[in-house]
Length: 331
Ligand SMILES: C[S@@+](CC[C@H](N)C(=O)[O-])C[C@H]1O[C@@H](n2cnc3c(N)ncnc32)[C@H](O)[C@@H]1O
Image (cartoon, rainbow, N blue to C red):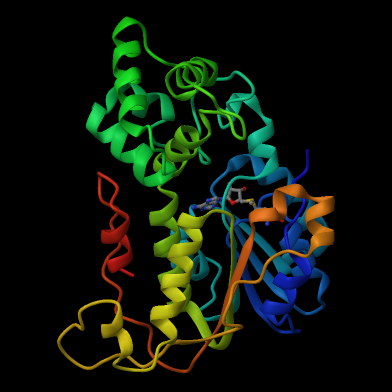
């Protein structure tokens, strides 16, 4: 299934598209946002995606829009290098539509879905360790921390212990093997969601370093946006949305108010680098949710870059054992 772009009108409005504007779509996917940005005449667009499988969609846009459109296969944490590679300095809008695409979920061989059997892969890109590597190599403590932090799974310890027992017999290498094991271990009385849902979500976030990528991309976007440029982020689950919300809160507070949330660093307080577009996250309309149920959990947050220096964010190296609070403190 081709991915249906979520909150497309709201995204375009928040980006404030205009002729002469340079934009970056950090999550190209099937190119739904990219096409809409290019449909505004006079815009130029750099699109990024770590998934080589999106290239055919990028080829279609190149054929139609020529050199107004460029695609780069790269994780979006590499935003600054990609912009420099395009020969740009500052840009007028950056958009992120976080998460997996319908195309990725629908292909069993990508290993994202517990509903269809396939290799336990879950990588959005084509490098790095797979979910099978994590499941078969990490300790019970590490797996349990991953399931608890990234999946908010209450049975994290039981799930990790069951994995360690099962892999002593034979390695867990397919989505079907893991889904069945989780159904046996966590499944008693399940009704609403499949018992493997949270464990699969946690592994996907861990394998792709999704929260670390997001945090680094937000800080990079802050550095590359021109004054009055827009940063627009659509997130689908609470962990991602929480990072986006924290980022915008820290960047939009009046100087000196940072101490409400974190101990104030020594030295001069920073001036805000963004003003918020709306105080609350924008949700999809009822009509959109009816036609595209996948949109129901989407939350859009956006900000306008002010003419002030970017915050001095600490280098965002994601901790080996996930710690959400440590990550947020680095923003
Ligand atoms: C929800 S889809 C985007 C759909 C797109 N807005 C559209 O209209 O077709 C998310 C895309 O972002 C990509 N992606 C996720 N995390 C990424 C990252 N850290 N760096 C680059 N691409 C990423 C995924 O591979 C996927 O193709």
